[in-house]
View 1 (spheres, rainbow, N blue to C red):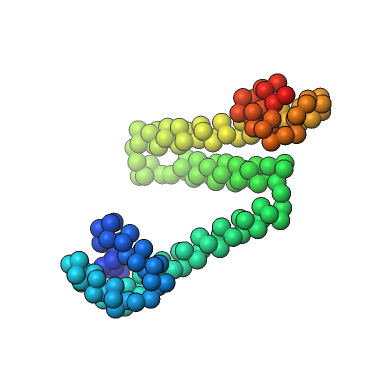
View 2: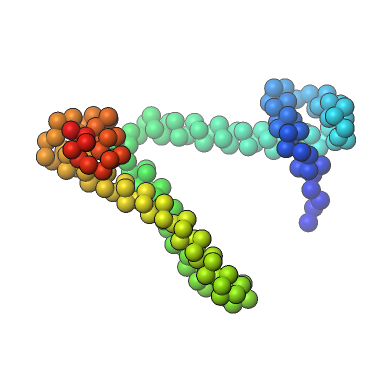
Length: 174
């Protein structure tokens, strides 16, 4: 295994300063950053700072690209039926189910029965809010569908949908 980078072992506050300095300098000026770090008491070479800067730059680019993709998706494909939320919920539930199934197949050497029981208890506790969110989403959709079918006034307004989904009561949206 390769040794950890000198930058990775810097205190968090110094790494945050370095991240800001890199972005403010548009990922250039590595010699100056080397000098500034040396003044702070850290001996880190220009090449290491450059490699770290490239890593930070790729991370920022990935975040920027993901944000832009989400913006374009939202702009180009309105989601009045909330199918994206349903898809995300289904994906999370599938991954959790796979994790539970894998956890059941763990051999005895992976821990004592008590440790396995504790692991399952933690998994179950973490599943509860996800299941609650899924049920709430389905109830909200059913409530809105009933409102539209029964002709409630204001059923189509955003504020009415929000009141209905928060309270679970179709009368709240009217």
